[in-house]
Image (cartoon, rainbow, N blue to C red):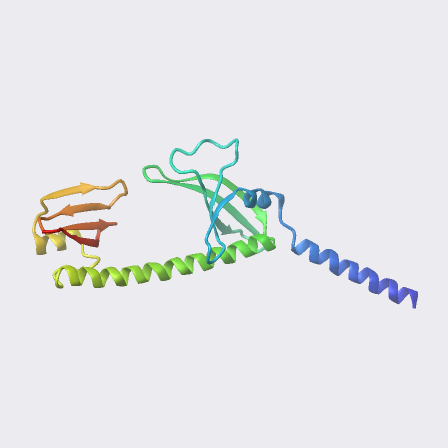
Length: 193
């Protein structure tokens, strides 16, 4: 009878130890979590992480973007902290290959929820812009038109101003301003008479 009770106790201790292991957070990921400066309120996804104190200084902005890349085996993940720059593009500041634990799994789930929500919001924005541009231009211009298509309808603009992001610029006409993003018509602002 003692042997049975001893086996039960040892088994329960093993279950408890296993539960602690699955809830553990790697020290490296714990360090990343301690440097989080911004989370999405809805999904809980990490939006910005401070660089390590000994990291090279960031030229613009103060935070790094978190992303995950699944490893070759299902139990590991590559954690990448990237700085997004307008002129230099994305630059990797930190990268780690870690065993997947509960905290990492939860953050991956949060990131997926965040991306899904962003896609929904972008779809709604596109629909709103489609309606707005059609209404303001009485159907002459359509959201997503190329500069050549716009020029065929409106003629050459009075003035063109480039933004810092590639493919982003403004065309100025006497009656309206046209905003292009990624080389496509994105917004229209009518001028006051």
